[in-house]
Length: 458
Image 1 (tube, rainbow, N blue to C red):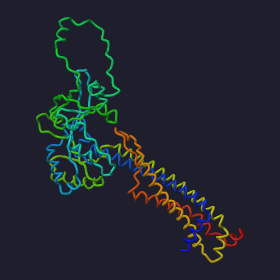
Image 2: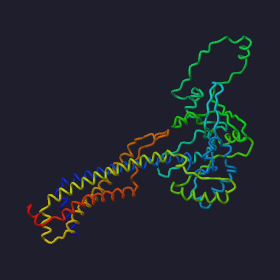
Image 3: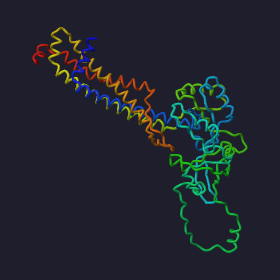
Image 4: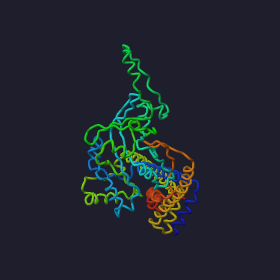
């Protein structure tokens, strides 16, 4: 206790230097915690977006992930309703599960006959009710309600396409797509059409330039099949390549297009859990089901980070920046405290000699200076955490937004600090460790001072 009191008195002796050192440490802690809180927000925000769109896990036919995109009919899940029932009624998975909904992905050619335009597309059939329930997931309490899918309340033959595809198919007017104009008509020079052919062409009913498209896809038997779809909306998909080729339609319509009158199948069953931390347990249980009650067909489960590699890439980039910032702030704190303690040792040489002459051992001198370093680290950590929480509250109520990569709707900028006790504790302990290490060498030099040489400075 005497060491602690003496160390505290020494810190108060030169308040200006102590405050300057504390200011550097507090600034470092604030920068580290604010960026760390923003890093958590980015991670949780991207996770929420992906989980709302595709769930935590997807059950697929074993080889669909590698080879099925080119031939979904050959890699469909048979009797998928039974698979869903087995998963939903499993005593281990049932408490974890919130939504289980099927989807069917396929490729094809979309055409707008009235405009003579077409292109290859990627289409996805889904159940509207299941998709809307998945969009309500908010385990991290962002408070942002999920928007219902654009197919909600639409007819069975309805479809939603990307804005880029609407431009290619010349549906700008029918779907009211902004910044879109039809291409100029080419001047085709040549001989005029004979009168009888011109009269026949004029009498033929011409297709109306409405918002309907024709979707051509290969059936399970290999024969082509065509479905006429009524486009209800064109929406931006966030990625241009997907925006130029995406079609969303009802699951039943997609199944008729691919399988016709045969048994309908799906290419994936999306499973949404209550908490992301339950993924390993749910995946392990699914592996047991695949080996027992669902062993009649080869199935596998993939989590959202495997299906969307950009999640790991984006969070990894922010994690790398956060690590680099932590090292930089740690080095600044290390040298700042070391410089302060070195100056303290030089100014208190006589005091050190006096204490040694009074019988204080070298270990006592070393503990005294180490105690001062730990106190600086503790004060800097406490003040930095309090200031960070105040600044985080101000930022969270400022209404700032940003547009995440691959997203359409802007997300609010939050600094998630309240409740992140592990991050705040790790920052405080790290700073105190840096303060202790930076004070160790000056304390060791002070403890090894010769009594006679120290008293000469009086």
